Amino acid sequence: MAEAKAKKQKGPGKIAKFFKEVSSEMKKVVWPSKKQVINNTIIVIAAVIIIGIFIWVLDLLFGYGLNTFIKN
Figure 1 (tube, helix red, strand yellow):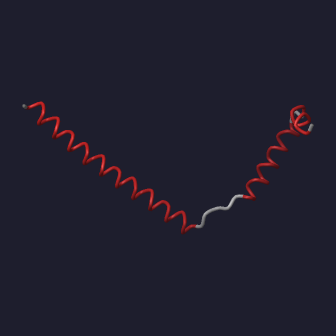
Figure 2 (figure 1 turned 180 degrees about the vertical axis):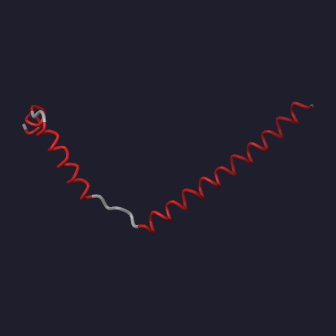
Figure 3 (figure 1 turned 90 degrees about the vertical axis):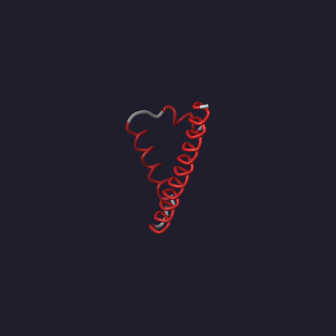
């Protein structure tokens, strides 16, 4: 029943309700501390570097193997 009323509501009232709900939900958010953000950023950067090096090494190996295969 409440859903039917919400669907019929139009105009500024609907927009105001949306922003009230957004404000209510934002109060429930638990934001990470500065230390957590820094630690997570370091972990992500390290993972990207490690995976990048791994892919680079595989590319070198496959390139060397392909060149060796083509020359023979």
